[in-house]
Length: 126
Image 1 (cartoon, rainbow, N blue to C red):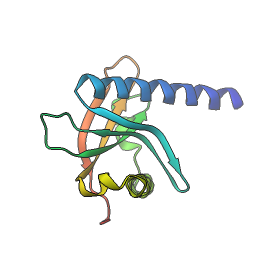
Image 2 (cartoon, helix red, strand yellow; image 1 turned 60 degrees about the vertical axis):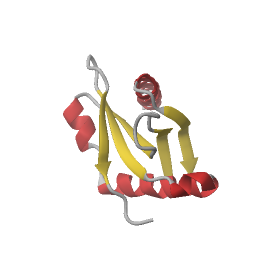
Image 3 (spheres, rainbow, N blue to C red; image 1 turned 90 degrees about the vertical axis):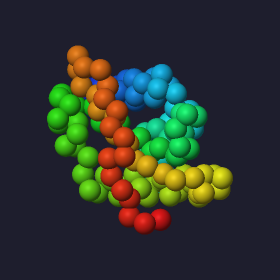
Image 4 (cartoon, rainbow, N blue to C red; image 1 turned 45 degrees about the horizontal axis):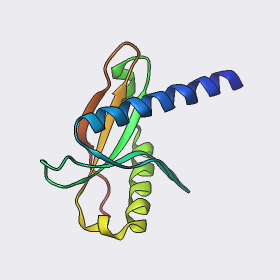
């Protein structure tokens, strides 16, 4: 059991690295990775590329056996925890409270390129 847990953590870290590299290649500026607060975690926080409208992007990375399984693995409770962590992150960085937010998803599956899906959900009002 412990071995599976460690393997899952390693797969998750590898997926987050792949996601961060994808975002950097697309021109995003990474502000934080694996930001944790009581009640939530943010996999990646980034700013949109300079040629796009400036926006803070909270990215949830999901690695599963298939892209479809990865996409379906984001529950409403998970979205709420990510939104909570996003509010906490911005509260600690006051300059970000005035910039619009969005929530993205990066899907990772074996043998496939990571897929970035922008603006996948809207949080409850902040």
